Amino acid sequence: MSSSHYFSAEPEGELRPRRIAVRLAGLDLEVTTAGGVFSPEHLDTGTRVLLDAVPDPAPAGDLLDVGCGWGPIALSLALSSPGATVWAVDVNERALELTRRNAAELGLTNVNAVLPADVPAEVRFRTIWSNPPIRVGKAELHALLTAWLPRLAPAGDAWLVVSRNLGADSLLRWLGEELPALNSERVATDKGFRVIRVGPVPQQAERA
Image (tube, rainbow, N blue to C red):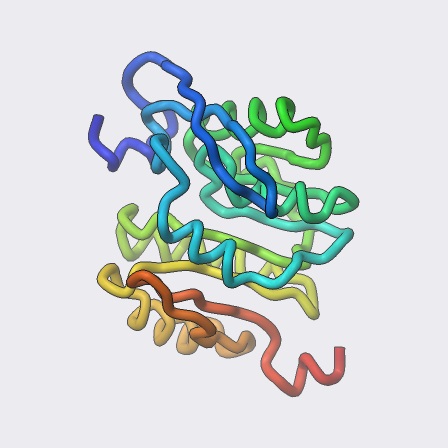
């Protein structure tokens, strides 16, 4: 199956679940994945780089994983912040099904795996963590980010991981131009990936 199908609403082929071992939020776990979603064989390098770079999420409030796949980021958020509400969004119905299954198997009741349109418009996020779907195309990627990043809470921040070879530096420049009310900066580089933080500009952060 072409990797491009992971951002299709209905991936082709039967659902054939497989179990893999992963380490999330400091715990060694087994989760369920399947073809037709992003990186079904293992925790991909970019997501690992992101999870190693982010600070602890807020203990309460609304937290967001954009492009959840089978759920590694959303599960990490939920495990780290059991008192928070975690929103895991994806256009891929199979990805949402797998994220729900994994959350249920881990006893996590604070994960809402839903289509983007099903997140209430009034929700504002304490943090957003994302390994965004770069291969979906520049126009769709930009639309995705301009839809979610302005929904940060006043003191909230977003953490994105992007491959250097797939345009991380140009994306950082675009974020600065497109969202000047937010401060975008590269905060880490590892294994060919950039971690970008987006949050309040310094003077706003001081007043918050």
